[in-house]
Image 1: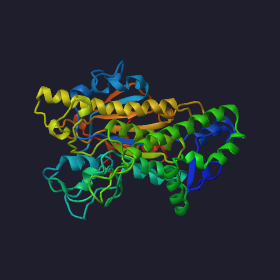
Image 2: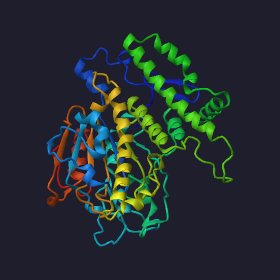
Image 3: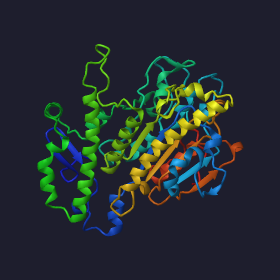
Image 4: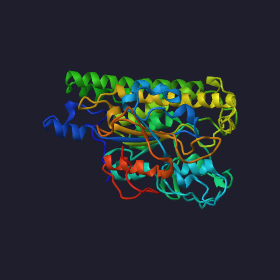
Length: 450
């Protein structure tokens, strides 16, 4: 049964519910410190996917064990090296052909969190498997308003032939509720914001949205009375924390409103309006989605999320960093040094966006004084190793975050490539830490020692 948002957990107004971060003044004050920490500092898990493999020579650290420095593609994560574990030698067997012929991009993305061989079809009879995030959502989702969030940048197609006979659904979806039910990602920041900060009454919600757009109001305007009453009950530290949080909410809202107003002109194609909250610049889009996920984690509206930075097989150019060629085209580099240099730039650009989020997580303090980064477990990687080879062994995988003090960082863990250690073994280790342990998942063979 879903837990209802109470007044202690949220500020309410017309069509609006602003979930709050953990505040000492609102509860658990009479409990002993250990109980307070246990109740107030949940673990979170998130999965980030990058398409088309990476330049492995620029990804893989030369050192094994303790890392002195992150280099190459991973350099943007250096400020957070103590919370970064690079994992080499993991494999995704179910992304291999296994008799099904070409279609590596579709298989890579659909198997990345499922460890299951997707059925080769571009019809309605798609089949993959439940994804790791949904296994976690089923276990811990009843503690939060949203069992999981599925975010993204590229909406992708849900039907049709996108990769050598594989349905577009395979290369467009990272999260799968069940073997035939993908969870479509939300790519419009405005839609995500409305979902996070809306009340449950549809009529009130419609009225509040109309007033916000007509009178240039903030969601915070609708909860001002509630906020004022709450402020009188808070201690000094909680007042500062609440003000900082509401300022962050308002800043994200301003950015989304700025995009909406810029897109208020008639759409170029009649009947096909562009999403109201999607920025024109890709970097702005990434940052807004990361900011929204931060707010969701911070207010404990969800503890599980997925976020592909692009769909597998994506061929978008990255002109903002001087790369006008399509990403997928470049990934077939055939060792051409010019193409490899451009692939490295794209790979590092993606890591830079992720590092932005990691830095934001580090800034947020939890109930026990730890950071949000200390209590999250994030997997960042691809279901393809080298984009030219389309190999599915020795994958580029990062584990970022402290897992509530259970995961030491600053390491490069290397597993024997010949052993073909399943990527799913890593997920078993995360499941245990989230209280969702299971003997098998996908093609797992045992819990990865991390």
